[in-house]
Length: 296
Image 1 (tube, rainbow, N blue to C red):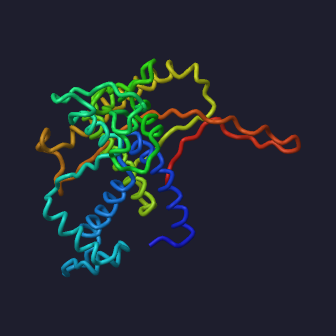
Image 2: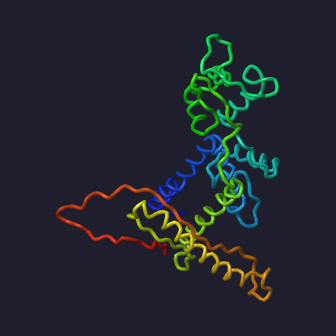
Image 3: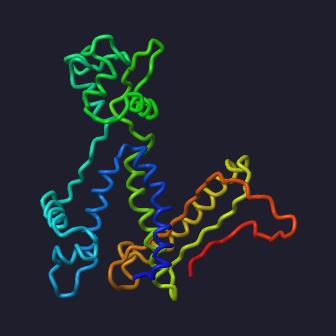
C-alpha cells in the first residue's frame, strides 16, 4: 500500500494518464457508462487473478474487500464473465443508434434501406425530418448537438438547402485501424507496467529512458521526425538481433529458465507547449535545454 501523500501523487499521475484515453473514447464513440462497466469488470478480473490469498478459494467477499465494489455486484459480474466466456460487448451511442434507425426503413429511408435526405425540421409534426429522427430516439440531447457531432465525425453533410444527408454508416479511423488498435492495447500497458515495476523495485530497475527538449521550433519537425525514424529503425534492428540471439525458438542453445517475454521499444511524441513566463528581473535561474529522464 502507498502512504497517503504518494497515493495522492499516484492518482494525479493516473488522471494525467487517462486524459488521452478518455479523449479517444469520446472520439471513437465509447460512452462513459460503457467505460465504467469495463473498469468495474477489470477490477474484479484483476482481483481474481492477482489478489487471491494462497491456498484459499477467492470469494465474492474477498473481491469486494479489495476492490470496493459491493458483494452483490461482484457476484453478478463474476457470473456474467464466466457465462460470456471472453465475449466483448460494444455499447451503441446516440449517434450509432440514430444512424441505424435512419437506415432501417420508412419514414427515414426507402424500404430497401437507402437513407433519405432529411430536412432539419418539417412543417408537419409527423413528417420525416432530422429533428423528428432525433426525438424518436427518446434521448435528452438537443437536436443541434446531435447534428454537430455527426458533422464532426463526417457521418453527415449539411446541404445548402438545409437538408441533412447521411454520408457513411459509421466513423472508422483511417489507416490500418485493426493493427494499430492492437498496439494501443499492448504498448501503453507494457510501458505502464515497466514504470510501476521500477517504482516498486528501485534497487534493480528495468530499462526506461527518454530524451525531452521543450523548445524546438515547429519548422524543424519534418526533418527531426525523419532523422528520429532513422535512429529508431536502427535501434529496432539492433534490438531484434539481440533478442533473437536469446530466443529459444531460433537458438536452442540459448540459456534456459521459465519462458519470458521481453520487449524493447522506441517512440516519438510531439506536443505544442506554451512559452515559459519571462524570467524575473532580479533572479534568473539557469535551466538545462534538454533532459534525459530516468526513474531510479
